[in-house]
Image 1 (tube, one colour):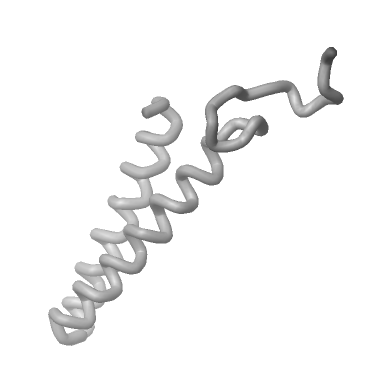
Image 2 (tube, helix red, strand yellow):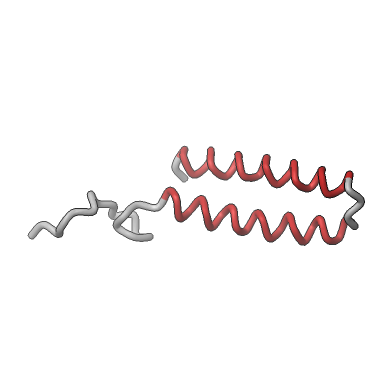
Length: 70
């Protein structure tokens, strides 16, 4: 796991906790808060992977994004 992935995910989890606390104070039922938290954590993981993934794809080969070298 890269450090930027971890930092992004920690920030997103802090955001989700804040939203859950706000929903609790607004009187949203706990079951719906749990559903929202699960959905947002899933979106956060997908976003973190997408933002920190190299241009070479999920294999981790990386690359500069330029034309292939032969």
